[in-house]
Amino acid sequence: MKTPKRAIILGAAGRDFHNFNLFFRNNPDYRVVAFTAAQIEGITGRRYPRELAGRLYPGGIPIFPEEDLPNLVKRYNADIIVLSYSDLPHFHVMHRASLANSLGCDFWLMGTKSTMLKSKKPVIAVTAVRTGCGKSPTTRYICKILQEMGEKVVAVRHPMPYGDLRKQIIQRYETHQDLDKYKCTIEEREEYEALIDSTTLLFAGVDYGKILKEAEREADIIVFDGGNNDLPFFKPDLHIVLVDPHRPGHEISYYPGETNLRMADVIIINKERTAKKKDIELVKYNIKKYNPSAIVIDAASVITVSEPNLIKGKSVLVIEDGPTLTHGGMSYGAGTIAARQFNCSIADPRPHILGSIKKIYKRYPHLGRVLPAMGYSKKQVRELERIINSIKCDAVIAGTPIDLRRIMKVNKPIVRIGYELKVISRPGLEEIIRKFLKKL
Image (cartoon, rainbow, N blue to C red):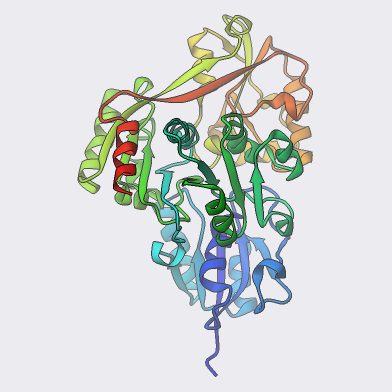
């Protein structure tokens, strides 16, 4: 009998589990001996449970920190290292490949044929070349268009399973109570709340084969809402990809964002009204070079302010979307832009940071005078609350998509910043989607 190849999957609690489920779970030619975890706080030390791992893994699969990789290769006599997470600069990917090869292992990047599920229903996928390009407002925009056309739409979000994996196999979100039911982190709420508010039924979880079957029962059309700059989990019939001229050149220098750029049917250049002309032109040059057949849409991210009178000319603390600032690499977001528009003085949170959030500032020194909305655990949410309440200022500008007042008590006014997609060229998304539907 052939001896199975022994694999270690490098991940961040999402793509890694999906790749395992689709390719490795019931494959007798391979044994996944370990997962490693990076990017996300507090997701190591768990096991991928036997209920998800399948019959070949009665004890489940352990999850270790990625920095333990050399020791893990020796301990488990691994043959293959599989990179299965996203938003990595190309040189970082090759550093991982070089490490794998130096340890004697093959290095794998899994392609779309091995990792995409085919749906019985039409799929529109929304992905990006980097974290923080504007996928979420674009997904909401598309869902609204489809709903106004009379289509029954279900959104399926890229996974964010940071809790008990056995309880997160399939998650169905219809109300805010469902966010509490599944004990969602701040990071999950940032992606889910606004879709729920727009009355779009949402699925997420761990096992996307099972999730797809559930979504198909309730949908005429499925909109897959990607995470980071990852590839779609479902084979798209229409693939819409966002690029960000605030980070020109990143569309061809990050993995797997460049893959999305090359695969796209439609490319949306977002945030154009706050970007430099030369940066927009560079992005357009790269699109033309690497995917000349794509339809290109010019767009803006329109910022709304809930109570501008509370911040105009005032001292404010700016809180931004966590992943956009951390592995997304941005030093500002919609909250900072709003603070500048209203001539605010921005309070410096750094003298007040503590606990796990202090480690985040050490890891991401570009953060500066903005506070990332970190909350991967109850403890981290409480740390964030203590930091906010210890800072002297007139108000908080919340650039995170969630209402922080639902999960913490803050001792100063919170002004929420919204951002919505505005298409500023033709053909627009509505025309493209109508044409897509006619072909079905």
